[in-house]
Image 1 (cartoon, protein in one colour):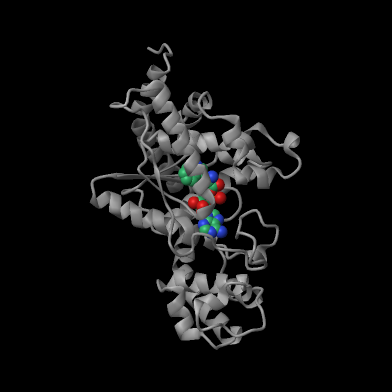
Image 2 (cartoon, rainbow, N blue to C red):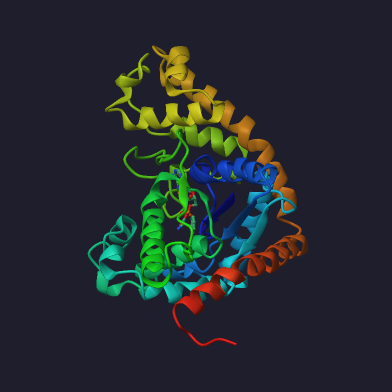
Length: 339
Ligand code: TYM
């Protein structure tokens, strides 16, 4: 069992990242450890170059993200925690895979279409080729399990397509170069929506801070954001079917369910018939109870830059070691002359 996943350092990590992905990193870290496997979690700092970014912020937000991941329960003694920029095999393998990936495959990526909009000509090359780097991120380590939120499913399917074509074109059936990775998407909370608009994903890049719960928000801020979250005037239904065309209500019930480890049906069993005036304070309380301790650990950890740097350096050394055999095999398979 090889668990691999990444998270971008631009913007603040939020509730969507936590419920959709980070919580699963922690669970799978323990599963991998128990099964004698390994878990590699990285800060996708090279991915941050695909959009305009401020170099002065990148270092600080990279270290803060490490502090967040550790505060959420990732243990640098159990998982390999690093940033891509310290492991040059990622962009190296990306180039080797670029000969296999097809323009048409990348052009169909919904994230590319959404982010580029009508101005495709004006986008960075990196925004277009970013999914090839993402494929390299997981294929480099022969990942078997990749915990992600729903929005990354298509990128993982692409990674599988690239791996399959590379294996077909350059390896024999009995000795494939790459393992096809399986996405691990949570049944609950695979797609947490914005608090201001139930049709938009909760996102680090949303200009409104009221649209998301940041893991670094204090208790009052969290409670305020839930209080102001967009809803409708109806009380909660007692059956899930009643949420079908109520995106904002569905999102809040989904968040409550994911935080409490219950099904949405069970949450409605308890709160059906009640208005948001009583549901929102209960949700805020649950949020603060779950995220409050994480924030406390984060606040302490983020002050110790030296320790955070050391965690990344130690993780990167291990990652370089784990990635080396696959990269060598890929170079050989392509007929490239190497020492
Ligand atoms: P990123 O940084 O946007 O998000 C990190 C993880 O959080 C999940 N996520 C969500 N889950 C539920 N609801 C939401 N609103 C929500 N928003 C984000 C994402 O699905 C992701 O799992 N390209 C990736 C980073 C990456 C990566 C990889 C992931 C780079 N290489 C290799 C897996 C494997 C990204 O931008 O995630």
